[in-house]
Amino acid sequence: MFTHTSRLQFEAKPEKPDAHYARKLQELIGGAWGEMTVTMQYLFQGWNCRMEGKYKDLIMDVATEEIGHVEMLATMVARLLEGAPAQTTAAMVDNDPVIAAVIGGMDPQQAIVSGGGPTLSDANGVPWNGRYIVASGNLLADFRANVAAEAQGRLQTARLYNMTDDPGVRDMLKFNLARDTVHQNMWLAAIEELQEDGLESAIAPSALFDEEYAEHAGTIWHLSDGKAGAEGRWASGPAPDGMHEFEYVQKPKPLGGKASAPKPDPMLYATSPANLGLIEKAIKKLT
Image 1 (tube, one colour):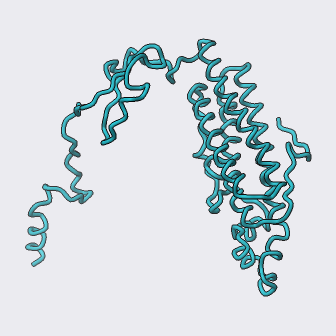
Image 2 (image 1 turned 120 degrees about the horizontal axis):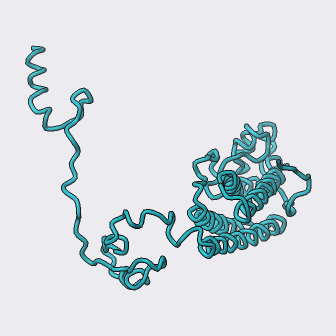
Image 3 (image 1 turned 90 degrees about the vertical axis):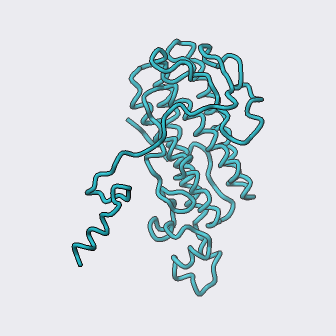
């Protein structure tokens, strides 16, 4: 069960309308790394979690918080759009909200589809996609994806912070930056605790080590023309999982045979050596 209160998690009041910036802010709502992505990612991770207790409770806590972040951003976009077309366009286009939206820098769908409000899309008007989310049921793999999501979200928020001088917008983004900070630290701590509790190792999933080809589980292949790859921590010594040793292979050799596709089905008409002479024969029959 979810409940809703009309009060925002944090204030979302711009000092003045700005349709162009409202379009930019759409990225934090419906972009690949936006708040809608982490909201749905955490909700489905929580619903997929097969283990009652602290991990599931944590996931559902932060998932519900992220719903509030979507609402804050949606409210900010709506307030940035309020009155914007009339203030940023000439009188001759004031009666045409679509033209006003284009000239004012608004995403036209904000005028056409949502009546001057936010849309579930990114800064280019591309609709949000459920394929952005990661919810595998493996908590270690999911929590690592969550760290990446919060890092990318904080990066984009930081960039947008520097794209406005509106004190009201910046005030909200300062809150969002802080929450992205704590969520990165939270997921990193949860990853450590999963391992301390013996639920996962450093590698996800912690299974099939006896099935994989162990001789290839520590080698790093030099496959570019860069010269510095062997200088990193990953080039030698024990791997983070404590089970493998790193080795940097300067001249790796292919282990498989020549890549070649099987003969095509003739009914698919793929070009191949088997087609040699077939065209001439077909022409002769026709003539």
